[in-house]
Image (cartoon, rainbow, N blue to C red):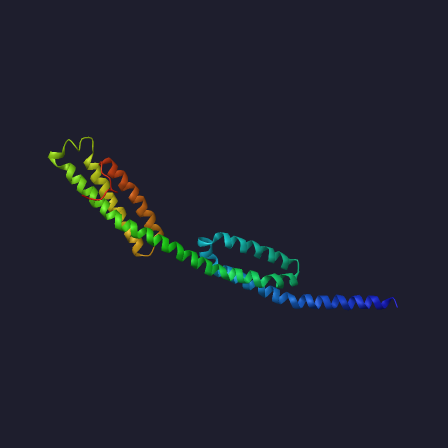
Length: 199
């Protein structure tokens, strides 16, 4: 009689081991699927949706720890939702990238419209101040330095345009914004207001 419970427990243990073994492979597959989705989305997600990527990575780390504890049933239960979130990273990153590109494109349009006019206004001001009849107005202004600064500004503007031409909007806008600040400073030394309509 005493051997019956022992046999029963052995049978139960065998069933549990079999069930556990049968769940291990799909659990491992789920881990691999999530890892593949993370790898595919990682580059853009790190740039455009870093917080979402961090959350998914943390959950994935927890899931792997659950797998290591051999709780395969828990892995199989949690994996589908996490796999979907990992796959969604690519779409979220693409949407955020498009949003940022649209904003940068708008900024570039404004800068591209303003900066050539700013440089023309500064060039005209330098030529105006260089005339002998305006010597008094030009007093205290280093026109040679202003010419040098304008020449440098023209070079920087070419760099910004080159960045835009190859689709590097971020660099183009950053360079153009820096140039705008420099031009406004140069205009200040020449005593002109770039924001004021010409004429």
